[in-house]
Each structure stands twice: as C-alpha cells, then as structure tokens.
Image 1 (cartoon, helix red, strand yellow):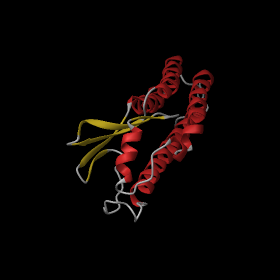
Image 2 (cartoon, rainbow, N blue to C red; image 1 turned 90 degrees about the vertical axis):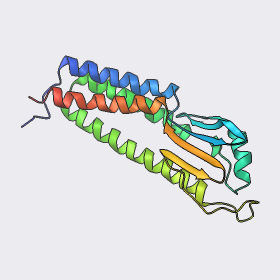
Image 3 (tube, rainbow, N blue to C red; image 1 turned 30 degrees about the horizontal axis):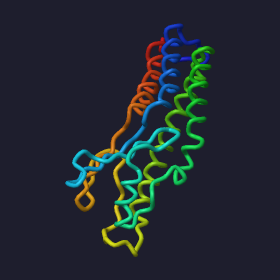
Image 4 (cartoon, rainbow, N blue to C red; image 1 turned 180 degrees about the horizontal axis):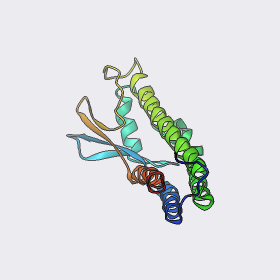
Length: 189
C-alpha cells in the first residue's frame, strides 16, 4: 500500500515545479477560441479567450450576431475574466508549494482541486455558450433555431462554419496536469 505520508522524490519535486511554471505561463496565452468562416469572410473571424480578456474581431462578430438576435460578446458578459487569473496564480503557487513540501497527500489534494476546477471550467464555458445560442431575440431580422455552439469541434449556422478549439494556454494547463500525475507513478514504491 502506498503511504500518503511518504515524501516525493527530488525529481518528482522538479516535475511539480515545471508544472507550476506551465500553469503560471498559461496566463499569457489564449485558452480557447472560435473561428468563423463564411464566403464574405474567407480569412475568418476570431473570438479569442484569454484567462483575463477577449480578443479577436469581436465587434464584427457582434455586428453579425445581431442579425440572428444573439447577445453581444464582451468582457462584461464574462465575470470569470476578472477572477480567473487569481485562481490560476493560486493554483500555480499551490503546485509550487507541493513541489517544495514534497508530500504525497498534498499532491493528491492538488490533483483533486485541479480536476474539479477543470470540470467546473468546462461546465461554465458550456453554460455560457448555451446562454448565447439559445437566448436569441424574437425580434431578430433573421430567424434561426436556438443552438449550442460546441466547446470543441465544428458547427454551421446559416452560411458560417465555426470551429471551436483550445488555445496554447489550455494545452499548457493540460500538460501541467499530466505532469502532476507522473510523481504518482514514479514514486509508487
């Protein structure tokens, strides 16, 4: 039986430190984006989501979404952008403390927090996409059926083909999570 009080190895501690760096570094890269392609926009339009801001051709996308009665995308509609950077920095600090303390029990707790946070993030994003796609104004010039854009994948609305995908920041977070699992295997004896 693996004891939760056993100290992690120095190598495992270094792996956790790298994980902390990846988590902190993810703040500087987009986590998610949606690309819109249509005959009139063959180069594509983007909504790019960072942990603390939105970028891309938001004004153009909002102008187009007006025709189907969708609410405007704005940072004001995503209160998460105000506190998410603090949660990410906190997670990076906890990961670094776990690396310094080298306690397996703390690592178990960190992995649990990480997994729950990831699940809550996915549910929050799904909820936002559902809100935008299903609360269409009945007074919109173009009538379409309500829809829920996918978190990942393709969708077609009128003549727009959308693709939703993770950004570099999310891949850094996924890599950080996978690094957290390595010490469990490495120090299993």
